[in-house]
Amino acid sequence: QVQLVESGGGLVQAGGSLRLSCSVSGRIIVKNTMGWYRRSLGKQRELVATVTADGWPYYVDSVKGRFSISRDKDRVYLDMNFLRPEDTGYYYCNSHPAWEDYWGEGTLVTVSS
Image 1: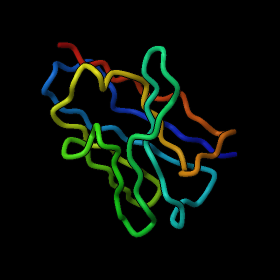
Image 2 (image 1 turned 60 degrees about the vertical axis):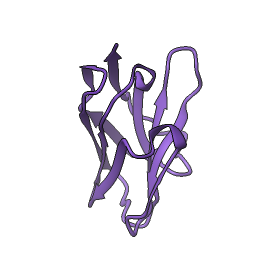
Image 3 (image 1 turned 180 degrees about the vertical axis):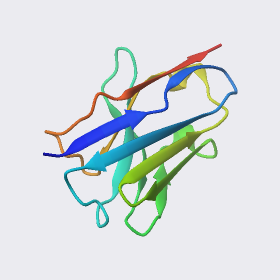
């Protein structure tokens, strides 16, 4: 049974920073590309960033230069800087492509203006 547990969310003012963490159990992810996804109010879940097994990152345009994804063994991290109100939402980690049957509960990030 795969378990994905996200943490680190919270309320922050615009321009602030947060570090999200994700622990993965039940499956070895050393060869997987892993990703962070976001679901904002009224929108579908969308990809935010990925990191390959070799550590190569990818970012969607809206977070380039502000977010940084990294990984270590069974954990995946997302460092978020210069946060904007439009970054508000639930953040989830998963493989990329996602394991559709194993989404975690996510962690809520709220950015106030």
